[in-house]
Length: 339
Image (tube, rainbow, N blue to C red):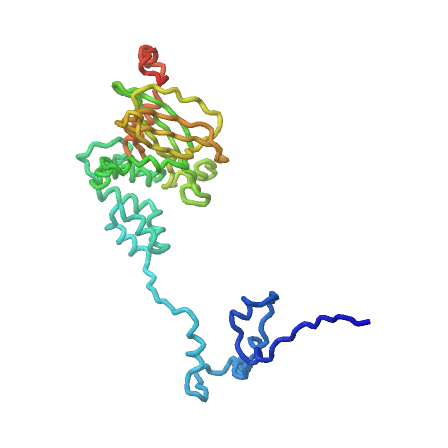
């Protein structure tokens, strides 16, 4: 009886004695991750280099006339030399730093970052631009700027009264980009009436990155285990907060939410009259599922106030007023309700 036997073809002898190419692996019918026999060979020069005693000088030249040390250091990264200045020198340099360059100065090295985190730096920055002719709240007067707790936020807020470039920013359109509120947590809402318009305020807060300096400061203020929280210059309960202001012609009832909500999206389109804008504010829970959508149409103005602007604390002060003091005629006017 005849038997059929399948014979596996052998490799061609022509493949031996040459370097493997990418086509030997890409066009191969069988996947093999084993290293090639050619690549596993060690030359005689490499064996002699490994067996060389450590005490010998690497500067000895070989028969070809080139230095072995130069060959070994060709693949190593170059050595970069730098100067390590004393921190007192960086304190002297910090006296000439502009307020808008504080972040760039802190990123130079670790010592400049340590300078920015000191109370001496923020006190000197405040004294450089203080002007007694400018009317400011009592919190920003020199007598109140002595304490270290919350010094950083107080100096930043005072610069929006004293520093002209920061004062000019308040009148620019940079604080009107409403898309910056996306992803922030909704804290409180309130509304107020100005002449014939209604302004709705949404107080929002961003998530603090774990391990960041503001997050550590917030944890230090909650624990209060030592006197360190009284000397925390980064203390700021309004860190990362914003207020979204939407001004419209009609009164809209905003429901009370019993869960933590976040701003998932905000869309600004043209109103039906093609003369004003329409704002759609989409709210979602922590899972990202949409819970509600608030639509304001028509909208006269949209503004975003950050925690360092003076108008931010003016709006917070107005929200603390009791809404029961409003006249009943303002609530019973049928033209104010958005049906």
